[in-house]
Length: 204
Length: 174
Image (cartoon, rainbow over all chains, first blue to last red; front, side, top):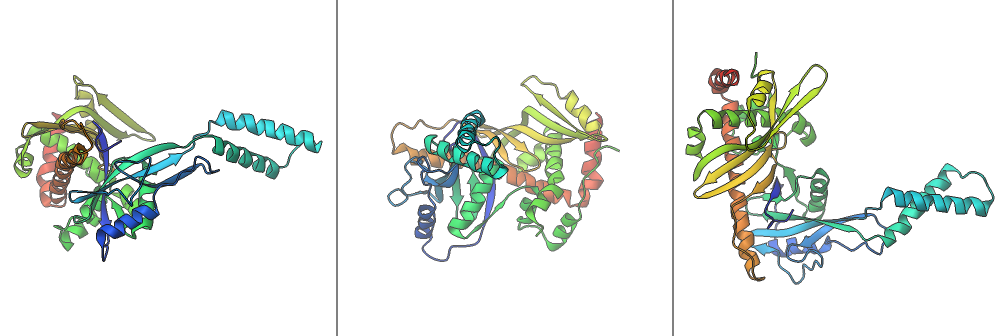
C-alpha cells in the first residue's frame, strides 16, 4: 500500500544506533548498494531491494533524492515469480517422460527427480516475469523512528534484514512490550513491576 | 531486554487489555483521554470489533462488523472471560476525522483512512502531498502512543487493581 493511497497500514519501528558522519551520503550509499536488481532474465525466483519512492520501477538513487522535509522516504520492493503449481507439474511430467525414454529405464531415482524439478523451475523462472510488490518507508532519523507501510510479516522481515545490512542499524518493531520498554518515562521500579506483570482477570 | 519473539508472545495480553480499557473508557467516560490528547474532539469505536475467548481446548473468535452492529454479543464474550483483540476507531480532531484499526497483540495500525488531501496535478505537488500525509498519519501514531503510555502508567499503578478493574468488571456486567 502506497503512502499516498486512500488507506494504509503502518508498522512502527524504533531505529537503534547512529550514523557517525555524512548522514545523507551514507544513507544514499546504503540505498544505492542494495537497490533492487531485475531478475526477469535470471533463474531466480525472488529478490528484495530498495527502490525510490517516486520511481520504484526504475530506481536511481544517484539522481533522485529521498529526502522530503525531515524524512527519508523510499520503498522496499520485493519481486517474486509466481509460477503456478500446475505449470510446474506439466513440465516436470514431460521432462520425466523424456528422461525415461532416453535412458530406457522404468524408474528415476529420488535425486534425478529432484534435479529435474529444479531444472524445470529454473527454466520457467527465465520465462515468467517477477511480480513487484512495493512498500513505502518513512524514516525520521532525528527521532529514531521508522514507519513501514505494511503489516505483512514476510515483508517486515525482509525490511529488518535489508535495513540492517544496508545501514548497520537495528530496527526494533514496536509492539506492547517494546513500546513499554522504550518508554523513557518509566523508572527502574516501574520496569520491575512491568517485568512481573500478569494478565488481568476481568471476570471472577 | 527480553528476546523480542519471546516478549511478543509473553506480553501480547497487554495489547488486549489496552483495547478492552479503551472500549470501556470510550463507552463510559472519555473526558480523561480527551483532556490529555491535544486537539482531540472524540474517539469512538467504529464498526468492527474482534474478541477472543479461550475455552477448554479451543479458541473462539467473535467478529462483529457493520455500522448497525449491536455490541451485546461482544459484551457477552467479555462476561465469559474474552479479551478484545482488534478494534476499529473513528477519531476526530478539529474538523477532521480518521478511521483506523488496531490489532492488540502487535499494536499495528491498519486500514488507516485519513482526511482528504489536495489532488496531485503535477510532479511538483508530490512532495507537498507526502508531507501532508505524513502529518496526518502522525496524528494517529501519536494518539496511539499517548494512549498506550497512559494505559501503561495506569496498568503498573495500584489504581489499576483498586479502581479501574472493579469499574471495568461492573461495566462488563451492565
